[in-house]
Amino acid sequence: MSETSEIIAKVTATVEPILSTLGFYLYDIEFVKEGGSWYLRVYVDKDGGITLDDCVLVSDQLGEQLDELDPDPFAEPYFLEVSSPGAERPLRREQDYQQALNEYVHLSLYQKLDGKKTYEGTLTQLNETTLTIQVTDKQREHEVEIPRKLISNARLAIKF
Image 1 (cartoon, rainbow, N blue to C red):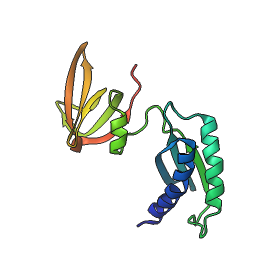
Image 2: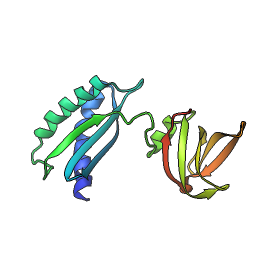
Image 3: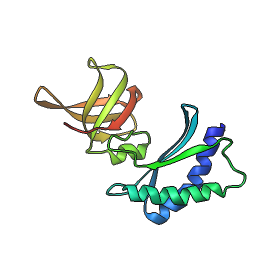
């Protein structure tokens, strides 16, 4: 297991009990180096959406508990950021896709499907091998079935 994976595992084990008592859930954790500084980003959510006050609450409690870990898993100083995954959150896990059913999504593909590498539409169905989205082309609605193996990036999208 890499050092980053070990840190993420320890942070996950530390934050999940905090979130459970608050009625929140963990969406994702990143530990990345940007511009010479390390950032520990913890994305949390709850039914109805997370607020800034919720993020501050989690940040305060998580920061205290991370400071008490012995041995300290962090070899370098880091910035702790707790936030919502956002309105255009990425879809990575099966749970993310399940929660996105009947939501507007953006899909980027590794290769063209019917002449296109990107699709936006409402996710109407999913199974182990495909996603089905309802798209509108030139005022005409139709369904497109997309093999999961072709999807390079998936996220919620805002419909304009």
